[in-house]
Length: 345
Image (tube, rainbow, N blue to C red; front, side, top):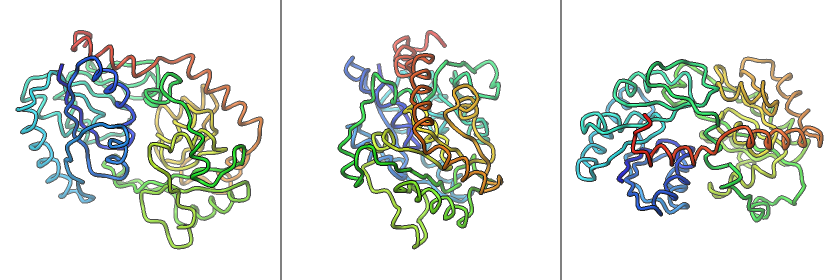
């Protein structure tokens, strides 16, 4: 079977890499397109996945429209020659036109309720949209749900084993408390009109966390001079191993907050609209705290530093075990869908 996959974000590499590995060994062929953005190519190279660069896109509306046309045409021209049996992506919309024109089944995974124009463009052209049961929007007749989280496609115990050599790279001793902070650039289409933490509040958070151990910062934007010393320099494919040993993960990335929950690390997610899966992880498992950037910064900091204790860590580890036991192996689920060649759609 031939499968065309479009990758638009570093997380998408993780979502699909184990499935690609399993099915490649069973004789499937893959044509992978990837957006040129932070960490995407590095991760694909690290996992030995060949790909075609579809460009980096634009931050402006007009540029995004031009990029959509160019990237879609590029994918179509390659797809005509590759002749895929199935299209697969994470709601990127750039391959949906090719799948529709070539009359091939197209499977989409999704986890962002406010995907906006992305979903408006791809939904009429694809066959099925899979989300977790925690997804808070009904997408109609094409919508199917699974009992799991996207992050279990790569952080399930079947696939993930932490590499403690990353601690030496980061200059951390085993058992030493430290936190990882993540800031995003708010330039995605679904982030239009939204804003995150102010520069001043970012500084307050970092300075407060620093009292409890080292702080490593991952940022899609260039950090101001006074925060550059906190920049985390670790190979992208080793990040989850470092997260596994962290005391706290805090930031504006829903994916990283959820990853922390899967790994048994207390986490704080700060976003104005939130996600269904982060809401569920807080309400059902208590391993994640959701806040808005409009919330009182002192309260956010108070709750965050309150997670620096053994009782909270033990509770997070217990919650992670419960998450693993109560939810399906998502990679196995993907493999079964593709092996059925769309018959279960």
